[in-house]
Amino acid sequence: MPPFPDDPKTSLDSHASSSAQIAQFPFDRLDADVVLRSADGVDFYVYKAILSLASSFFATMFSLEQPPPVASSLRHPVIAVSEDSNTLDALLRYSYPVGNPEMRTLEELDKVSFAAIKYDIPETLMTLRLILRGLTPQAPGSAFAVACNHSWEDEARLAAEHCRKIAVSRDRSDITNFACTLPGAVFVDQMGRIPAGAYYRLLSYIRTRSFPPQFCTPAPCDAEGRKDVPAAKPQFNRVDGDTVLCSSDGVQFRVHRVVLTINDAGALLNETTVVEEHGISGDTTRSFQTSVSADVLGPLLQFCYPHEAAERVCDLAVYKQVAQTAFSYGMHTLMRTTVQRVLREALGAQPLTAFLIAAQFGWVHEAQRAAELLATEHLDDQYSRELETTPASLYQQLLKFHHRCQAIIMQIFEKYSTNEDFRDTSGWGPPMPGIRDGPWKQKWFDEVTGMRSKKVKTIPSVITELQVKRLKALGYRYQVSENTEYFDLEQIITTTQSLESEVKAALRTVKVGLY
Image (cartoon, rainbow, N blue to C red; front, side, top):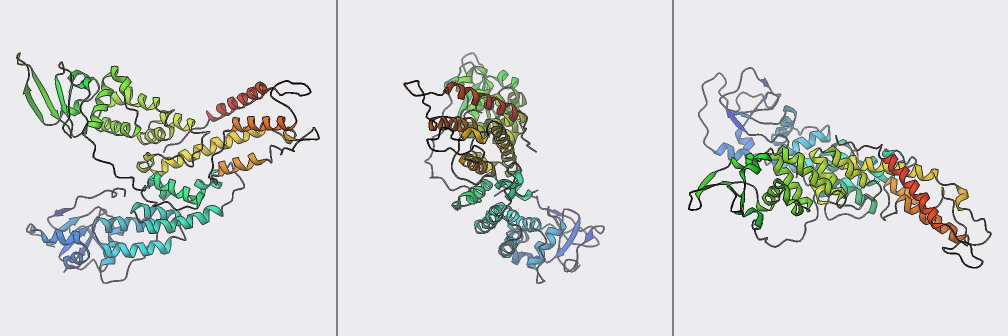
């Protein structure tokens, strides 16, 4: 589940301010014994007994010894919270013996749900889930987003069913219009903050009618056995190293302080320092304890040593952790010179994962290149674990880019074909369909609109295959023989290469938008 928005640090102020705005009934009674102050400066006068019955969070807080109030005109201890007054008002009304508030929007329901989870108010959560189910038919996309935010699988499944009804009934007449595609019809702004993995599973369900084990989170993998803590590689056991970095799991890496300094890695040295004596000459090596695990610290240090390029990270899951660590420690020089270059080297092998990582870091060039590599690929069944940590909004931008590329390819393909190309003129052999109305059309219609489950070929390979089938049906053969004509396969390949060049030139004009 995503973290709470603006997760607060609750604090006790000395007394309520006489200048603060007071909330509406029933939170305006001055005989209450505590004040909750909203983020926008509204004071809610509430009773500890009611809050303690509804919320174990407040019950625990009020059971602790409280400091004596400072003398003031109001004499009410104040608890500052991070929720705005509308959210706090709705949350409290569910706990008070008054009528329940009306949830006007799913966004409001989402905020109140986050607050109910944070303050541990289970009865309110049950009520909110029932309200969500009632609102789902009117706004299934937003309902799906709310359900995923809180890992409510039953509500996510219900919302997915209603999303599918919208998707299958959409207008698909203009396949060049992204709004006519499956992602274009289903996605709503509120989905932008959920994990892209949940959005991927929603689209997959709509296409296949097959429910995943769960929508909100990936299916649990088989439990892995305990992994041994990796030892430092030989290159980090150098006797000439003047600094030792200790990983959080006890592995020591002997390195050179000057190398760390060049790579802006000085922050790694701002931990607890232990000075140890080494050697008969009295030389000292300073050891620094870090909070980084060995499986991340090792590759990070490899990035700092240029001659270790042959052993750099190839697992992009580990690579991302290394990049995040480098960023958190302010290693900007290393990020510019090495970390981004390593990702560029991995684009060809794992373009989807590379795109998702680059998009999260805001690396536009690398994201664009990865998206271009995906332009002629089938995206529907391409999954990466990185989808689970990527906002759905970034994945949607990739789908938009991919659709635009597919539409461009299709338009160029049509320029190379007419009905005459596939008309049987020999009077024998099976008639071939016109290229504008043949089976390929439906395949690519489905490819562009997103409503099919099997892979299709790229445009150049499709036109080559169709040309060969046409000529073979007319009696042409690959090689010359008596009474048999042949077709020029090299000419067909040249034609399709020309087509592919035009496609690539057109695709270079399409840019993926990250934000």
